[in-house]
Image: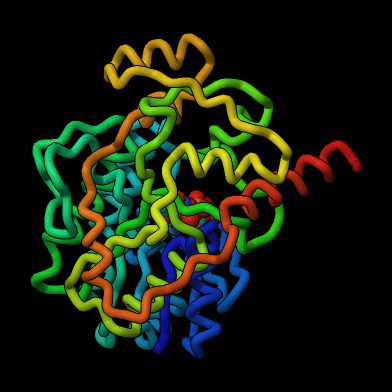
Length: 328
Ligand SMILES: NC(=O)c1ccc[n+]([C@@H]2O[C@H](COP(=O)([O-])OP(=O)(O)OC[C@H]3O[C@@H](n4cnc5c(N)ncnc54)[C@H](OP(=O)(O)O)[C@@H]3O)[C@@H](O)[C@H]2O)c1
């Protein structure tokens, strides 16, 4: 198996590269920076025709690639329409055109996000994508477009979809955990002792998982293979948002200040923002949508096993970083 990982220098992509290499696959990792912690690193840009690869490199990639993972960024919940759509919509179209020209392609896997479902109405399973939903931000809409393009091409490409909620756990690349985007952006705020306002004090599922089991699931989708199916993966223990915050803060000896907020939609958001809740959280301060937990049953066993204590390990990795920064 010769796996090309688009976005394989990133947080999730690096873990996928490690999982594929550990299982004996030949791995090639493409990104603009051209970095890799496992496999051969290639510099390219998914927004460009033929991934922006020079002719010789392109010929090798075309000839050798049998499997492809699509896990390129950006992951910012606050990115604008330009950044989000250039990558996840027009970039995705360009990637799918490239995949059509791979003669030995056996299986591709698109890494989607549960956030592509936006403010979905009604119970959601692996079947639904458009439910008449509205989107909280351009990232959600970008990931919706990406999955839409992938679904539209499944007739002529062997491509499956894996959906994740927020992926947590120490960064497989080492170094400082990224708290610039998404849910982790809230962690420094909580660890500093500031309050967050959540409906039902965060007693609702947030569909997190850890980066290791997410990467194992992508490997499973390549090797099982998933075919043209859709799988959704989250920690089967289903920690609530309040539990996630509590566990991440535990190694710091901090009890997160979670304040009850009434689920009043825009009002909750307005109050949250006025009292300093990070913008990343303000839109997610109440249950996100109704996901059928039975979606896990579409994944053939055995399932990957999340790392024990990955939530606290996330907090410990942040603690290590803080200690290094203040020179302890
Ligand atoms: N992290 C999560 O919680 C989560 C949850 C669900 C789904 N996902 C999806 O998983 C994917 C990866 O997420 P992540 O957290 O690993 O993000 P990340 O750490 O920001 O990694 C993004 C990767 O994409 C590459 N990339 C970005 N723009 C590119 C371009 N134009 N051409 C080539 N490579 C490009 C980046 O490398 P360069 O910048 O060097 O190009 C990097 O390797 C995203 O599609 C995200 O939507 C993530």
